[in-house]
Amino acid sequence: MADLIFYDKAAVKVTVGSTSEVLLASDCSVSFSSSVQPLYSIGKKGSLGQFPSSARVGEISFSFLTSMTGIHDKQPGNIINYLASGVKGSINSNASGALIQVAGLSGTGFLNSYSFNIASNSVSTSSASFTLFGSGEISNNQQLNVPVSGRLANSDFAPISDNARLATGIAHGRFTNLNDFRTELTGPTSNGTVFGADYSISFNHNPIYKVGQEFPTCTYYTTAAEQMTVTEDIFSSGLSFSGVNVNGEAGNVNLNVKGLIDNSAQMQIGMSGVKQINTSASVGLDDIVRTQKTLVAAY
Image (cartoon, rainbow, N blue to C red; front, side):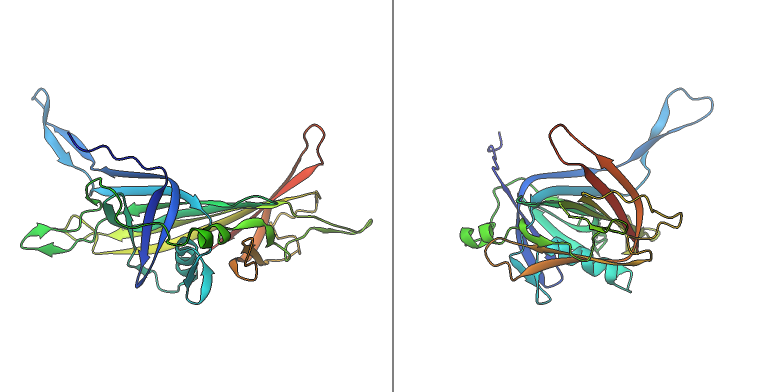
């Protein structure tokens, strides 16, 4: 019988190019699947057999504290935010993927989605999801680097050596700001107060398969869709049919995420060509009226 493995908090190592970072995940899910379909023939009872209908693929998703302890391209933040920013801002669609390692398992994955939340006086949490296709390398007529390789084992890397640095490098709502988004009303004049924001981005990728090869020879990112829901205290019914943003035109929104101690460092998330597509209001017992505004961008 295999040794039992228990994880209180999972250390997930993500490597993009020559840079890597270990994230402290609160949960992690890994799956590996192969699709088959049965073939039938007229005049014969039962199937002729079951045959592969698509390539083997893997999936990995995890949630983690929104850390800003990493430095990537001289900018503070975590490696997932760095990867998402690089993909959506790149003019080159060809992607090499990221190496994901957790609990003795590893695979080369392509970012599907990334999201996090920020609220006043609260710790921020994030989540990320990857699809793993495998590299497609061939040696001695054997397919190498399948989507998920390895076996469950105790992790051989620690989340971080300095726990104090990790604790002070977690994104928090205390000093975070969204100053360039604020609903402004006239007659009477009033400026909205921002209470929180939920951010998410999703990516589409297209693997290219060659005849005689199961795994893709290359993978391309095609489109990205970005969304932020901002919680405010002003409801504006002036949303136009074209879905323009709060300033009446397509614009940019920057969310500056900061930690508690060293709040001079910030992780910035920028949305360009923003459109506002929704506004709503809700109220609870003994609470102020809160409004939600949905901003979207496409790349």
